[in-house]
Length: 200
Image 1 (cartoon, rainbow, N blue to C red):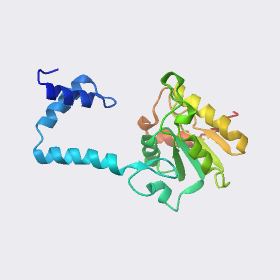
Image 2: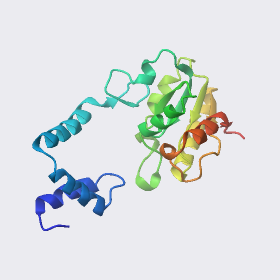
Image 3: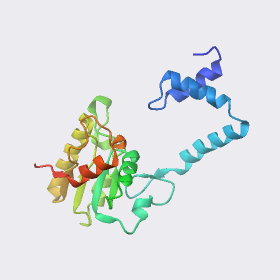
């Protein structure tokens, strides 16, 4: 770190972001110093606006700055199929595929006892509320192929199967330990097409 305290503090803030190491954080801090006052104001305003305006969609829990997210607001989507994903980034990945026309439900995390994340910390109560009117015929559990993703998928399957709703899992096109947001569109499309029942 440099001998400039305020620069070190700025770099430390950047280092708190996921995927940002110490060297990258230092580069970002130095880059910000080169910004004009107008650029700094715009950068700060963008962060403040995002924090103030973005909230969870009341239907699917995806992030949005509108009353409903674009998917839930789209009357052309098939509301009989819900794709359950870990976070908003997974929704973006599936939307790139363009072949999926159902709707989503965002969990905002995965069950992880080691990290103290229990089922109650996820949006499972909101998911169950969406299943009360018999509109939904299938729930696709599209959590990643990680230990936490598999545990969450099995928990959801046990939760929903007694309700008589078809619960499926993505096919094994996603490598174990893989994150959905990094999967290419062809792999995701095939994983969707090859989804399977949990009983198999």
